[in-house]
Image (cartoon, rainbow, N blue to C red; front, top):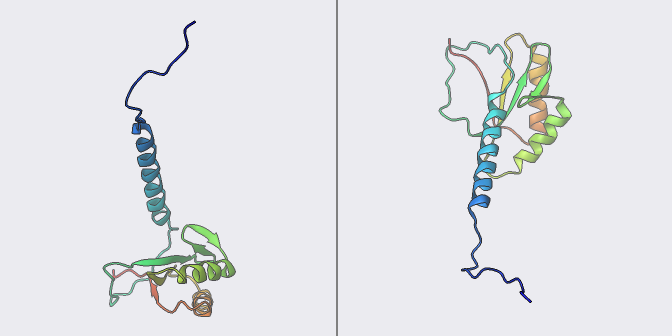
Length: 134
C-alpha cells in the first residue's frame, strides 16, 4: 500500500504573498492619511498682508470654523466638547505642536474666542491661525 509523503524540499515558506499584502497595507494607510489632511473643508481665509507663513506647521490639530459657526475637526463636523477631548488626547503625544485654526473670514469672533478658550482649558496654548497674504 502506498502512503502519501510530502515532497522533500528545503521546508521554506514562500513569503512573497505576505510581503505583497504588507506593502499594500502600508500604501493604503499612507494614502488614507494624506487624504485626511487634504480633505479639509473649504473656508474663505482672511487676508493678512503682514502675516508670516511658517515653513512647516508640524504635528498640529487642524480645526476649521465655517462662517455659520460650525466647527470641523480635520474634515469632520464636530462640537467643542469633542474638540476638547481630541486636543487633550493629542496633547499627551510626544511631538504635538498645538492647534491650527482655520476660521472663515466671515465667522463671528465669538466662535473663534470659544475655540481658543477650549484649547486653553485642555492645555493647548500654541495656536496658529490660517490666513492668506494676498
